[in-house]
Length: 373
Image 1: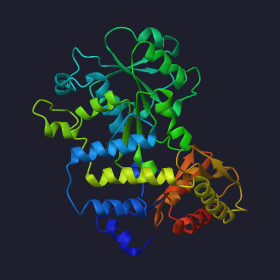
Image 2: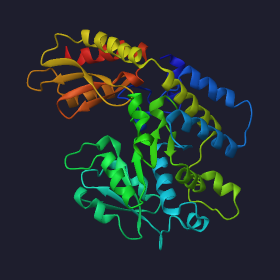
Image 3: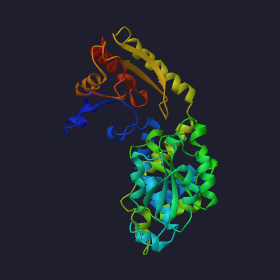
């Protein structure tokens, strides 16, 4: 990176960081491609009716993903919040105005034991109450007049003892209860990315940062009736309706964000992903070659999920290596420039190329070498 690029942060007293960890929110999420960046710049030449832009962009996104409807949100967590609100309010303006007070409403979201996870908090922001149920008791728990939806974290499909997404959808739909899927980073392989509407998920949340849009951008897609209900809970509804004072007013997106999401999605679907992954592997192999011979270290290219499906795994034997995993992570982080990497507990350091500029590959390899060779 150039001195000018570093200066943007340094003049504010913030450290520039080389990101070899991936699409991590706390590191800034992503870097838009030249095509996405140009679309954002072009969008600044005019102002626009934001309601129309959201509606038209939703039509384009929905068609690309094979869903009935779609809506751009400020991140996947916001999509979960608005999706939950949609399941509670179902487009009723009085219920929209009532949130996050859910007294008297269908405000319970079910989640299977084995599916509890960090980002479930996004659901309760709407005022909903999360209730954990054993997978064997899911069907019996869907009765009554309090169940808004079932939350299904897609990355935990296959967790021991839990129902598959398809089985969950079947059970929930038998009780006329929608299923809200958190598929934040499940954007590759493309077949997986586009599978959720086809499998019958009612609402799906994606993080558009994984596609190459901005950190604070996402997509909510699925059944039109429910996406429309989510829109009624969003920021535009607060401004354009006398009766719909939605709690989602803070969940605002810019016109630049909307065009970035559409452009990034189009670019992602047009990408030759075999070539993209082969490029990652070549870069990781080159970095690994700089570290061969380090004592107590074994190197491998490891498959992973998400947009960067390959990482360099640097296994470190604390008993024979020059440094243990914690020391390596700390040494990279406290050096200049700071380098952020992933880790597998105390076993290995992980280098993710998806957010790593090719010009910085050598810097990362060199710094790892200084610590381990």
